[in-house]
Image (cartoon, rainbow, N blue to C red; front, top):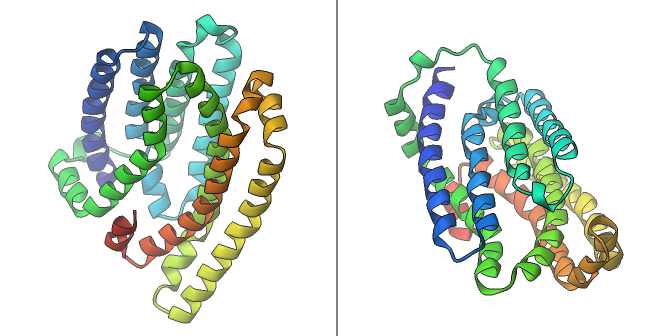
Length: 278
């Protein structure tokens, strides 16, 4: 609990800086007032994410509370959208609903930890952060890789084109979540098996086979029915985004393999090598 309290204090400090930066950036860019307000409100989810202690539970291999919190967050988000978002004028309510869901997840996880915030030390949290410098750089690089294309499209193309691409990207986010779940399942086994190369190789091979068995049918099926799937989910105007959707789906298959290898790098303490690869 003391480590969680210390690290959470540092995360909260960074979240305040991040919200300020996002708000300033949103109002500095040459976009419409609605988009600027939407980006600024999206920053509300940063604070609940900073409070989320899922990383602590994963370190202790207690994944059930993490899954419970994630389900609660998505349920709150879904109910809020269904209750308060009915037309385009309600668009600004969506990031608020998302922040409410993230706050619910953080509350669920923190309620299961008997923690006295007074025992948390900001200085100790900074020391832990320095020790995890490679992990932080890894996460930042992944964030840049995931969001860079959307940002560039927003700067170089029209809002309509960004909307078409974003719709295709949303479906791929589901595949990303499935890929993350697939490799997290094998993370504890990889950590325990690292002392025995033969056992570790067997676990890694099983993880790679599972990634292919889960990812390949989803990607292949999505590529085949891409136009119809986009029309079904978002409407006929989005059918024209099928080419971008197919390319994104093909790249999603790499996420299944990359996630498994990332788990192996983490289990064997080779994060610096993973950072170089990224």
